[in-house]
Length: 238
Image (cartoon, rainbow, N blue to C red; front, side):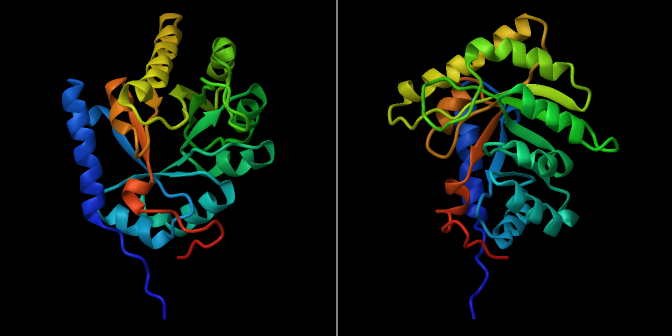
């Protein structure tokens, strides 16, 4: 009989310490950076363990998997973020079940989320994913098209535009890691100067969270450092 995997509170504490150290270096309050636990492909036993250790926000990449977990863990009062590439045929699941979406990158997706968000629910918290480099297969709005998309989302009543998100390519050197994060912050600041009120930068993962925090990240998306390697796709368990 297989035993359910166990979450290690030490892993959570280690990540929180890294965030605290990075915010101290950046002369920011540790509370200014929220930890988003990326639970894609992870069994619900590990999510329950993380929640019991104090983690409240979780990110999922696949709509069907995420909705199933949201239903199974509904009694825990967790906040759920959709952080995967969003297809038009999956917008209803996301609009009806998630609290945040980090990957809006075109008008059609925003308009569908707005139309499908239940009237009884709070507005869906939205981040615009920005494509900072030419990476085939990766989503994101081009920086030049960002102001128009931000203006459109702001007009949609069932969405609340909160900020920007990016997924830069891996880099080993801290100074290289910081460059795209600095660019995203500059784009956010330009939108605010134009009249928006955006407070969120979703950037930084297990290998580069320190660089992201130094450049102003308010949400870091951490998976491997919390849960260890992901199981093969299709092998999640409860």
